[in-house]
Every structure is written in structure tokens, then in C-alpha cells.
Image (cartoon, rainbow, N blue to C red):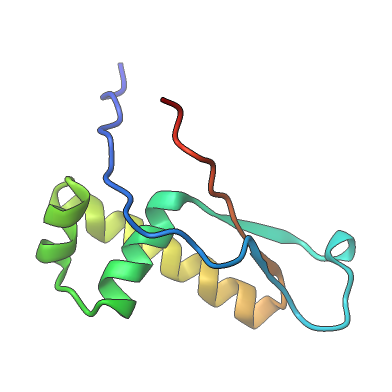
Length: 96
């Protein structure tokens, strides 16, 4: 049985929901989805310039889990830039 997914603390929110190449309709592009936890990992590690341990503590996950999340996020961003895909930031308001 798989281990249950631990809740991750998400404090940042993207300014926009999608980034794509100019002049190409979104419907004609392959869409790559960035999860809220991946966006937060990018924000903390690359924008806030935190170490992986500091960012992991901020998100409430282990350093190894944070490393896995940031690697997935960076791959998605890089592949979108290289291949010219749309980067869709999937952010839903938390249910209360």
C-alpha cells in the first residue's frame, strides 16, 4: 500500500494561470501543468533563494521530498521553454 501524501504548506500564489509562446493560440499548444507544490518549491528555492532544507521546513516536508518536488518543477519549466509548450499553473483555492 502506498504511503499517504503529507499536506504541504503553500504560501505563494502565481500572478497568472498560464505562460505560453506569443502568437500561438493556447488550444494549439501542448500544455504542461505545474502543481501548486511545484510552484511553491520554485518560489522558495529560486525566487526566495532558500536552501533546500530551509524550503523543505517552510513547506513542512522532508529535504528529500522537497528535492524531488523541485526537480519535477524545474524539468517541467525547462521542457516547456525548450519545446515551446504552454506552462499551466494549476492553482485552486483551498476548501474550508
